[in-house]
Length: 278
Image (tube, rainbow, N blue to C red):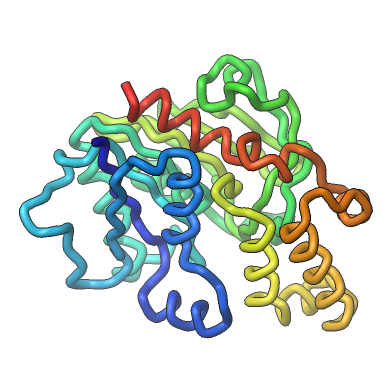
């Protein structure tokens, strides 16, 4: 049975604060997304943002078939242990030559681990829905995007973005907000398939994240006030509860690329089929 290592991007303290507000951990969201389509895969989670966290006894990186790097509320360009240890772990795993998949934070630390740079987006936060992500010629030909439209919307939340790609990296997709929405990153002996958005998310997770950052979203002008935020979040949650609600889908401007689980998670499904189940 194939076995994957899931690297949680947030510290245990961050996860507890989020859990107190009803927000699932980044690794839990990823595990759910993978197991929804591949229930027989074995998944282990490592909390690499905290010291003293180890792999299961008797297991090394070489015993895994791949690494998945979840999202995080940290900044990949910071130099504290919570960040640098995750970069070091990614490099160490990449020495195995096994495949790596990353979302958002996963893209960013892979870029830094390989010698590129990450910084705050000059356009501010991209939150909720990343609109009109367009595949370039390399993206249209890459197996990560098998079954995806050439232009699609997807779920996201990020402040930071890739500023400089490392040598040998290939951009696969872009949009008006961020020039690198998907890329292939060569790292040590491995290759990282990575996206800036969150194919592992569902609408419930976006609703949770908006509740978590509600004050910031009001302050940054995404909502006029808390009532406005509550109304929007309620619609997001309502559409998650009933994806056939065409009125809510129309009001939110969301279509099949987000509402269809298989299409929304196609990058994850394609990575597992292409890189793990071979």
